[in-house]
Length: 142
Image (cartoon, rainbow, N blue to C red; front, side):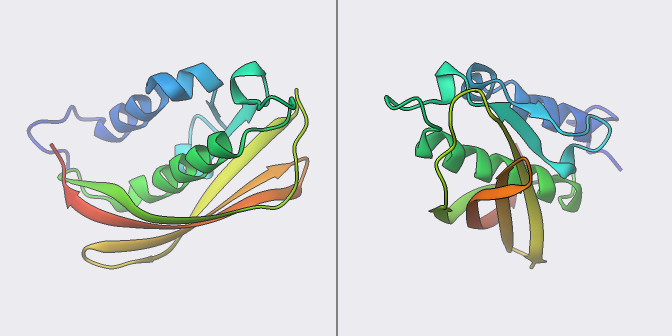
């Protein structure tokens, strides 16, 4: 049931808020499945996601691993809950060249009352290129 401060489709509003973050727009993230945002995101390794060597910038993929983890968690949050990252460990496994499509998926490993443990993986054509262990704290929304 939606809270008084959120429209009836609060989940869609929250997903759109994630997509509308200027960094996310700049990089060009898209939902893998608009009907199920928890599935994950994808983005092109365009100029806004590249380092000086025209490879995927490690900071960009690190940020987007966190985004995919949050989207995976969103269906598990009540309308009056939000979650913030308090720890993230990332492994960058392979370089990714320009103009490739990177898919990023998150998984909720365990949700407690106040802490959530998640995993996120970035792949290119099915090959794992980066992983993250993400810990989020559940906080009141608003």
